[in-house]
Length: 188
Image (cartoon, rainbow, N blue to C red):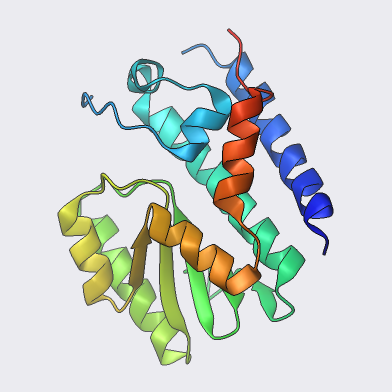
């Protein structure tokens, strides 16, 4: 698919989230920014007002952007795998079972157990579990649990590099260009 068409699809996703964020009335003192925060003009202070909301919404936006790029550019793309009632990954490209996260901040035993189980489930079915995380400030115990479960964990720029290697589409540059235009800045 031509880059212009992919950008148009991504634009639709970003507009949806821009509208959702604009309608929303709104920690830790992390002032790190990321490409998704930059697109919407979300400041660390605004994000701190409701970390759970922003983490959930930016995580879903990330998932949709990544799966759209893979679906548009990878002939071996498959949608999320379902095992019983669980979806241990967001999509499959070739033999890689890919899950996306905005940030992993939960260290509760249920979350860590799920990461380990899902990695094992995917590996048993012949897939290589790959976890693509936007943020770099993840909980170390959660990352360790993912790696123990067999996940190839990529964070920050490593995630964008993986997407480019698999799809040939430079998502980071595209998101940076969108951020530069301020087209998707939220208003309150």
